[in-house]
Image (cartoon, rainbow, N blue to C red):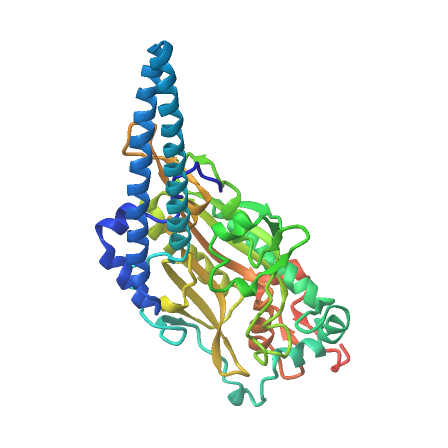
Length: 439
């Protein structure tokens, strides 16, 4: 987004920051970030306001002086014209100083992540809090056989081909084949049907976006190395349809008088998985390309907390429909990402790893993304002309990774897989047969 010269971009709530810097500093500490950034932003803001004030005062004087010049005649006018030229140079210099101060303040502001919602756990990736655990993992020992990992199961039912994926595209790429492709389509179609029934508008989104949109959503911060960039086109490949959905109304004023605007985006997603060397190298758990149905909401600020709980409930409903044991965790502040104020993950049980792994995330981004993307609404408490930022929220409803959990949790002794009842009509099978069993 572009802003007039000398104007500070509204990328953070400066009024709140000025009134309560302690809260912002505490948020930084909870994230494991430097609280001194808050003081740096406030000082840059002070300098910007002082520079802008000097510019506006001098410009007002210039305008008044211009009236005198217009009235003057003869030699007196010539002297005043010379003074007017000098005054114009001063105004130009002050405007440049105001522009530079605004630019510096903007750059500092862009470094400040969203303020963490009160109640979110402090700390890093391992400091999450388990809110609840649903469902009981199968006791394979009692059933008399050892569970197989999803990649062995997938190979046995001809569901995916990672070897040829690597041959064609490199490591962490794959083909979904036969029942694997049918399983993903069934899963994503189920997710979209549930979303539409709940009032979401289905969207097929672009997967290439401009830098302003990628930056506006907060994905070019600490985790920018996860994003694929096409320099010849100056476009980014999205790692989630959240990015394109957030940018859908950039620069617009929304009417949310009748309630939140809820969207459900279906898209391919691309992630470099930088820094994951050696992690989850088998199968399709951690890959560079996958499909996902993502919920996205534009809401009034007052409705954001309630919408967040609603998105989490939808995610849990989907996990129950495909009959997966799972737990819900409250993600710690240091693992939120720059745009989220609060995030809940749903993690499904993976039998061969004997642990829960992330399947969904839902984040309340409050006004963080909307401020950067200039998505506003008419202030319901104002005179009809004032605007304010909306809140944005997102949540995963289904993704390719779910296939991992479905195969492992629903595997059978002979290598075949029981299809969860909610997916059977779409797939047209009750059992995904094992090739080894001769089915």
